[in-house]
Image (tube, rainbow, N blue to C red; front, side, top):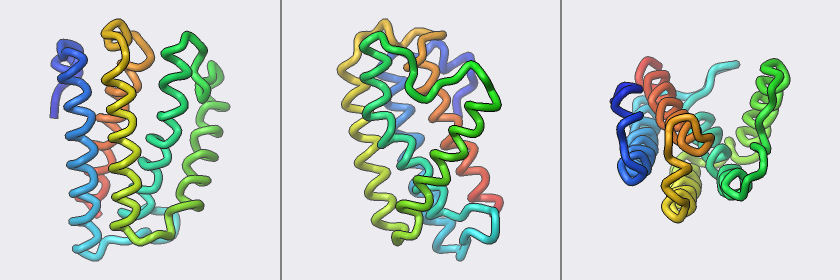
Length: 157
């Protein structure tokens, strides 16, 4: 894992590589957790739910990132933190409900395709979007950290 300071020093290419590696590690962790018998119980998510959630993030990113790169405000951003949390919860629930009942292997394939499409989009963007404080830079870092959080959740399960 990289510290926040080392991520700030990464080039666009390094950040995109870290993004892809975080997803591959997350997918492998989810598959290993499933082999250990980890499943979602009650309100807690298991590997399928985590993978569906992250696939949803990246499917949405394929629309969202070009929108922001074109100079428009973030589609799913809100100044009101309570509203933002409610929107995030709704989107997470929708994605998990829509695809979360699929077998884990196909879900991992959906996630892999989605994040690879995001990598293609990111690679084509100008380097100026990969400066600390820029939305796309911050979102990419946030996804890396989110993958790591979910991997820790799955390892602890």
